Image (cartoon, rainbow, N blue to C red; front, top):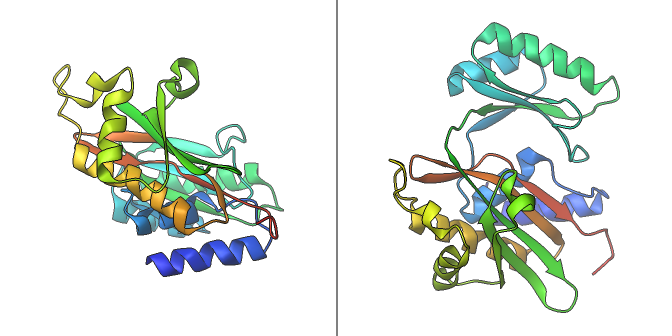
Length: 234
């Protein structure tokens, strides 16, 4: 997806009264701006889910996906580590049954990204100061340790590099315990990309990329959520 198509997607979603983009559309928008995201396919049948997993390679993650499905795990609509076509097809049928007959979304078949370090990038929009980008530790540590730093958008690469040094756990980005040094250039571009997406799309109220898993040295967004402003709120 190109940036202009991503901007049209936001405009259409706001006009339709959606409060958020689906995970699939959120990550397509983020990828358009330069955030590295997981390889994934949106499917609507067990047959297509199995075919998508065969193309992506096993193991895979299977998730419910809809613009109004903000808490997939709590709803029981996430399965991880599916290692065969049969597991994917059976998992699809299970999740579809859990989602219920009125579920209008699809299902994401997503590559399973493994890494020992989880980061987060986010954005909140303040009525007075505008969009503010946040970076720090991700996963369960976001709320537990609250090791995050903020910058007003738009950002320069130098701002993003400074943010990496300002979290208390900055050493986790280096070569620790045999892990490769995080690709700081790629991470800086991702942080700047979130700020740019916010600055160029005033209808976006929040962005949440958590976790951003470091696979080897490469940070990859395995989950992403874009919250929208209500229509006519600008």
